[in-house]
Length: 65
Image (cartoon, rainbow, N blue to C red):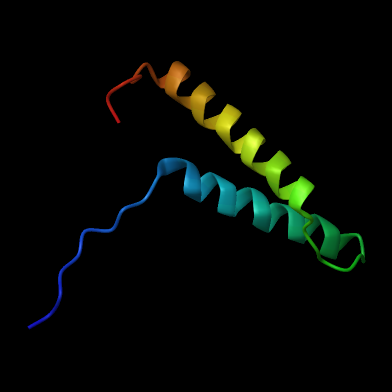
């Protein structure tokens, strides 16, 4: 019998992953070594949070997610 678990995910998680990938891609395209500091990660989280709230406001679905 397969163990069926409901995946617990946050909509903001995908945004964070996308921004991290973009960060690494920009470094790679510029010929730099790909790395991510703790400060850079926190900046990415803040940007993702702002993007998420902007999306909620513009979609008009605040409180319905």
